[in-house]
Length: 90
Image (spheres, rainbow, N blue to C red):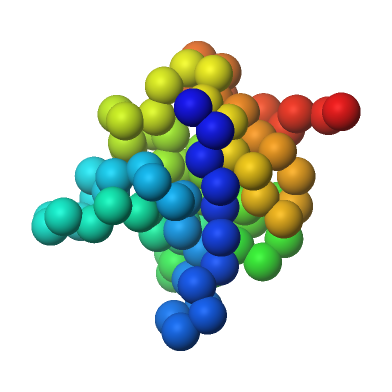
């Protein structure tokens, strides 16, 4: 499956479009991406490194992500491979 990662303008959060959220209760059809900062706070992915971290965290807690699923982001394409997320280079 190929998921597009888009930034929502009203709330300025990044979403994995079409991936059901397993983090929050409810019928959310898109998953919010957040990355954890060293101080323990959560932040919006604003760089390639933060997007990578947010996707890796989501892979660890969302059983809907399968091996080989790809994520198209403005920072590049990432793919779930086993328990890892890797950047795909053209």
